[in-house]
Image (cartoon, rainbow, N blue to C red; front, side):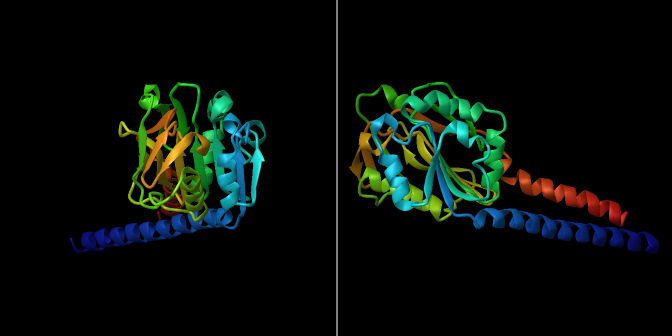
Length: 271
């Protein structure tokens, strides 16, 4: 009986050692990956046109906050845009870019590359005031759908995130969004957090922690189509898409994968 207790105690200590070492290895591995992204400084606007609908408001807002911004088309960006040299990436799909925007996210490898890049510490903004009305998987457990308010002649959207609610006009609101991304803003709480709602209470813009990074997703149009101030914006502001969520374990898959791999090695060594 005494030997059995000693053996049981030894097994518990061994399990505790495995768990502790696994945790340290996992955190260390994620920290190394995150450090690679944290050291970058380039920002990229990805679309087929930096002036959707013939307006430059989004591009102007981004370059005002992130002067290092460069422009790449969907075709040139591919999966290579998701590399440690880039800090903030905007993927924009308004106006005539809708079909190409959809095709980009349906290109094999793009969503996986985007998720890995954000998980390692990148800050990604996905926005599409699209003219195509299919449901589009944009990764991160998020789906872009046609805004049911689209058919209304006039409606109002409400900013519910206190970090944006004080913005005095649509251009400043966009600049505020880019500032949050540039600062590596971390959303409060778990899951997808709504930042702007439509008049029907759907999410026009939201934010989600994903690994060490952040993803913002919305269906907003260019600032030139928007009016309003404070917490309310009117006009064609939420005219195309909303964001809905689905269960997704991507934000922890990288860390869990590293942890299980390390655990397997330790088990073999301690067996």
